Structures are given as C-alpha cells and as structure tokens.
Length: 70
Image (cartoon, rainbow, N blue to C red; front, side):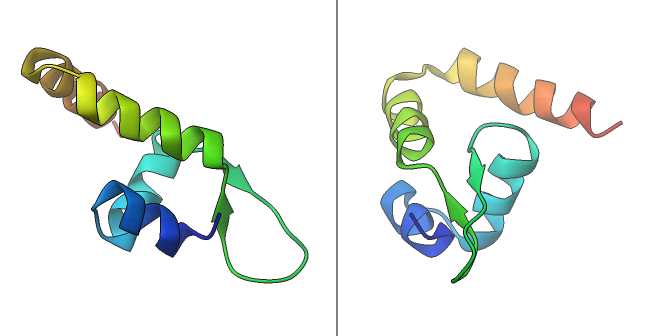
C-alpha cells in the first residue's frame, strides 16, 4: 500500500511512516512504478500493536528506537 495510505490508516503523518520504516516497524516494498509503498501486513501489525500495547511497552519501544539511532 502507498505510504500515504499507511499514514492515514495509522492516524499519523507521512514523516512518521518514514521513521517506522527506518526503525524496522514497517516493511518497505519496491515497485517499478509509483511512489513508496509498505506491506499491508506490516501496517496491520503496527496498527494492532498500537491498539493493544500498554504504556510501558510503548515507552520501551521509543527508548529502543532512540538507542538504535546512536
């Protein structure tokens, strides 16, 4: 699915989709024609995680993502 549609489904901005891809939470797909895409399965998995994760899990994920950038 296009990254913009993924952003709409997740209720986030397109820049956040890029961060989720960079951190390995969404899986990019290369297609010969069109814009950037991500797999539908990874978007649905992210959506389910966001719906079910508790605050400590979300905080832990943010901290892990920050550490990956250093």
